[in-house]
Amino acid sequence: MITRPGFPWSRIPNSLVRRRAERGVQLTFDDGPHPIHTRAVLERLAKWNVQAIFFVVGKFVENHPDVLREIVAAGHEIGNHTYSHEVASAWALRAVTDDVRRCHAAVERACGVPPKWFRPPLGRVNVATLTAAMRCGYRTMNWSLDSNDWRCRTSDDAEKCAEAVLHEVRPGDTLLLHDCHEWIAPILDRILPLLLAEHALK
Ligand SMILES: [Zn+2]
Image 1 (tube, rainbow, N blue to C red):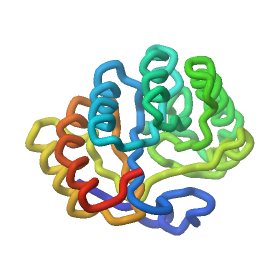
Image 2 (cartoon, helix red, strand yellow):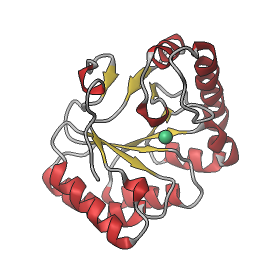
Image 3 (cartoon, protein in one colour):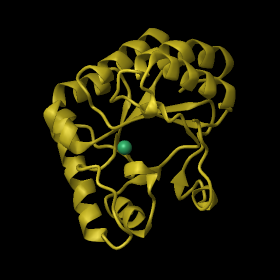
Image 4 (cartoon, protein in one colour):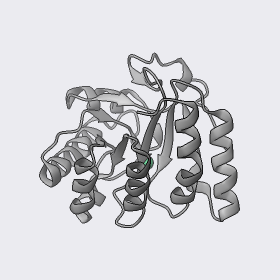
């Protein structure tokens, strides 16, 4: 089921937590890198010559630094999605800061390119995640359209997810997808050519 952020997330200004793209449609992939599914995503983005931002999890970067380097070599941007992917409470400033720094270090070690954007796990923005991001020199980016792609369990689900994205997407949307599951490949096969035909993709 495709969703847009509701209250209170929808009230946070775009300048503080970016959800809208300047133009076109911004594709974002969370929760990688994954040795199979991230590569399946990269193949499809290359086929259609589309750029994306990958919000990576530090512990997976340490497991698959080669996949991270492939993302960067293909010209995509890396975002920081914390080291542990644990959802932080609003009081856990020190823990979140450590989590952001640890992911930052893992990315720099793997590819030498420091990320600029931060996305908290589950997009749960609070005082701790916002402050930690700023302290570490990041801007926070969430999304305006959540595909809920990770809920897919069958090819029928993937087809429905792709159709919902195509039906709902608007210019300026930042779309949330995940490169950590097998259904992302058929979803991209369906949506990329049609998104390209109707919208500018990054
Ligand atoms: Zn995530």
